[in-house]
Image (tube, rainbow, N blue to C red; front, side):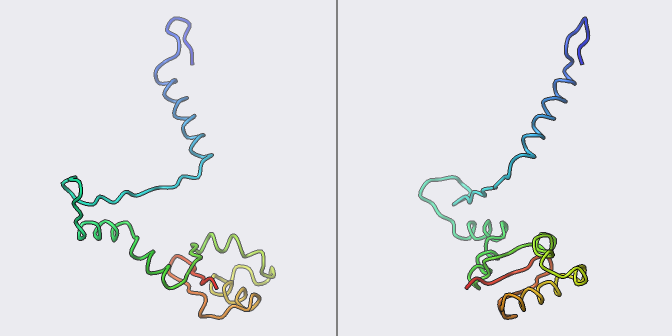
Length: 128
């Protein structure tokens, strides 16, 4: 808003700047990079393996590595998985849950039950 005497207020400048930032953020797909510090003292050529392991565990990397080693290439949360693949079901079958969706897809794609795992929040699929 512009006042005839004072010009544009600081609050309205902030509001428009914030709205511009939110618009830009909604257009992006952010990727986060977590840096692992080799030691707490920030000294060169010093590596504290216990500290690095603690940071990797905190970041969830150890669990991710374990899942990758077991061969599960696809890791997708239930809602996203359902949104992507529910269209492959007959309308009468939709809404019966994730386990039913996985079972139907397994039968149609000739995938064994050993290739799928249903977690508490994610679906895991092994890649051949």
